[in-house]
Amino acid sequence: MEQTVFATGADKGLGRSLVARFLRAGFRVFAGKFTSGTNLEQLTNKFPEKLVIVPLDVTDMGIVRRAAGVVSEQAGALDILINNAGVLLEDTETPLERLDLTNHHLQQTMEVNAFGPLRVTQQFLPLLQKGQRKLIVNISSEAGSLADCQRQREYAYCMSKAALNMQSKILQNHLGPRGFKVLAIHPGWMQTDMGGSDADIHPDVAAEGIFELATRDWSPDGAIYLDYRGNRMRW
Ligand SMILES: NC(=O)c1ccc[n+]([C@@H]2O[C@H](COP(=O)([O-])OP(=O)(O)OC[C@H]3O[C@@H](n4cnc5c(N)ncnc54)[C@H](OP(=O)(O)O)[C@@H]3O)[C@@H](O)[C@H]2O)c1
Image (cartoon, rainbow, N blue to C red; front, top):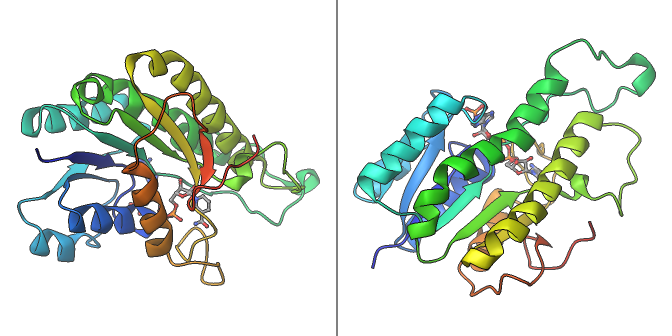
């Protein structure tokens, strides 16, 4: 039977690499696309039957609901949800003393990185419940680890990913008994618009690791917070 995946923030960076990887594996891929970029065009031409582009702003409940409606109409169930969309809006060099706390970056970071995945997960739950894998992959970061935090800046981004980690744990507690598995994955430092060109790895490398993790058989009580190679991260 055809397997299905929905990924948010899918039109560039890691999201696009994930879309390409799952398409190559024969999945039907629903790609949540935020702005009007054309990065997915090549994949649409190559996989016209398998790729469905769905408009998505994870901060807008109505749009999230409509996206779930599209998947419901076209597939009726969902195997894997990947909450990938994320933003890094703040000036990462500025210390607290000079940080502008009146701009909207703080709120927007939490809205996209922490509350966005919660909205999407809530609306896609009925579809995941009918799916075979019942897997929710939250793309987190090492920036969300309290145990390994060395930073003295980047409050909003780090706080949003720590919140996403907590969300992942609560979700696993809640949904595990229903056969769900929740993962919070650090994708590595990637050469994307967010990670910059000096970063360690191409997003295709992270996507390969995440694909491998997402298509494994998981026990609900196993580890949740992992890097893209499957190494356990410290909360
Ligand atoms: N890059 C790294 O080194 C790194 C490290 C650790 C974790 N991560 C995490 O990995 C994920 C992917 O990062 P990336 O490097 O691929 O970032 P990216 O290249 O900046 O891509 C982010 C994606 O999120 C989308 N997006 C932004 N706001 C959105 C919204 N309100 N609703 C829906 N989609 C929205 C963007 O859409 P538009 O292009 O249309 O704006 C874009 O497709 C993020 O969660 C990030 O925090 C990245």
